[in-house]
Image (cartoon, rainbow, N blue to C red; front, side, top):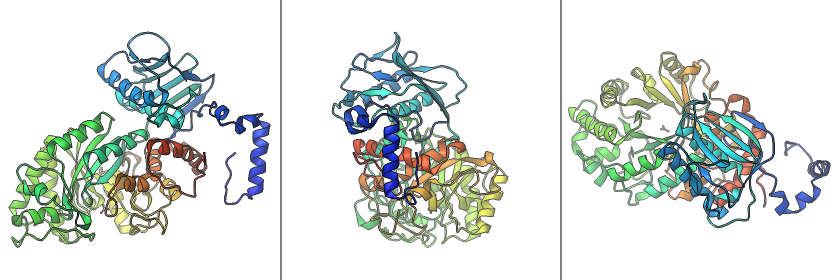
Length: 533
Ligand code: ACM
């Protein structure tokens, strides 16, 4: 039934639709919104596309009598509470959490070979069960269940329903273990509630890594007790000269806790040796000439560098990474390493040779932007590739060579998944240095073949960064992230065999009413046939 709308005459489309509707014997259904709502969402109309779907049997219907069974552990109970927190407002049903009984909605841990994040969702008229080997799988299964219910389930007031889940089985697990999103909280500071709102949006698409770009020329955003002026002074402004801000350690722990409750790991980044004006402005001794530059509120890049020759630089790096590692239960510390245009190549290499072991000393794994591959990535390091189609063959070859030698890769090609790129020349927000990136372009690539010559085992996954030179409010972030974030999430999660633009745009269109219900401000790309009602 999918048609290419750009090549099919409009009259043919309408006639075709009428014929299909008539042939299916549902002409009256289409005429009555109430009746139309009774057709439950097909099990495969989910983003990211599930690994396997077997439709069959009659649907399950959530009613006033439905309970949510969460036997076993406190963690399963917590996931049940998260689910009922979503379902209760719109259904108006009590949905009690219970430990015993039959039927209803069941969340259960059970070894089934589904891995750390996989799950099985089974729907019959008697009930819906989600089973998983581990809690993260149950949580991801809950996101699928959510998308199988009508979009109105996301509303905060009682809605009419009915609340049906199509019959059949979904068996699902991710293609890649690393499915990330980055927020640049430096160019414009984002408050804890703004970060939490984004985390909730990421969780809906099974993203499991939140990379926070905590420092840059325009602002230092995390308290470091041993270097207090970093946050107090270095965090006191932002692009455009606003008041900026920073996270206290309690704030940061709260973000980590909130993310972990949604099965996201926080990856903190301190960008070095470039992108460091906020630190250099805060402490004169970090500058080679001993003179602190002024704070910076513009949007140029590449003009700042830590002083590679000074011991004070390494005292600073050690203290910052020690305090950050102590705050971070996650496995990674991201040390930046991009656009160090004011650092000589020799200095860059010597700096990275000294800094990477500090990350290991504090028990963490190095992530760096892919320029790290031009130095000596340590054993186990991961490089985040942010090149473009037009990136030179030599630069790509350097990344491929590093991957062949054991460096892991996270793929963030800027002309695909940099969410701050404008969609078209008329997009009111965002930048365009990497190009204009419409929804199809953002979705239509394959991580496995993107950099030819990279061994499959090197690819850890996909991350969609959101840089904030032009973005301040949650509505700004959302307009740039949606719909493209959903595509990046799907590239990270779904098997290559499910990749198909026409099928994807149908599933994407179905997300529009959900985003409306959630109050998410999204770009209504003309490449997608958004529902009108
Ligand atoms: C980057 O966009 N400079 C990583």
